[in-house]
Length: 121
Ligand SMILES: [Zn+2]
Image (cartoon, rainbow, N blue to C red; front, side):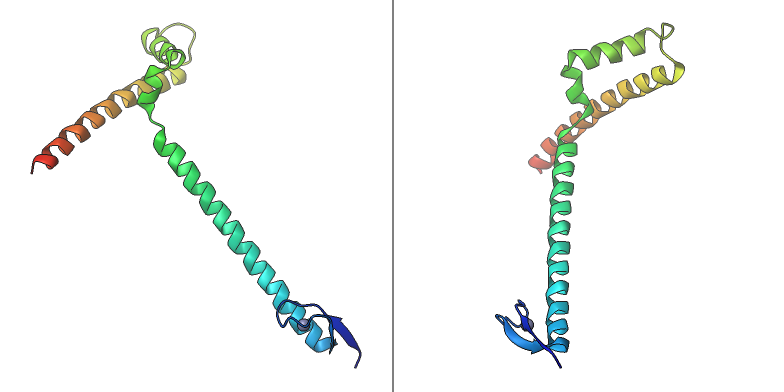
């Protein structure tokens, strides 16, 4: 049986001559380990991206846009000029967005109120 030099990480043969069956066995272990390592790194990278996206989304709120003059101009225009230039769907979206802003503000007020009450218990 021919003998081939093996430089595997699995058994750390260091170039020792091994038979082809042993060589393939070591090569298979190294390939499996590289695959598992790559999968772990990919999973970690994806988790990190998911966390970053979640943190970014959590930092966003509709009411943040109330301080943006361009957004507010658009919302105000869409909610106040119901008959000029916008489709019914655009108007409905703008009105719902405005209502969501109001709901979010009310929810923030409620959370602040409840936090104050819970703090006094
Ligand atoms: Zn080996």
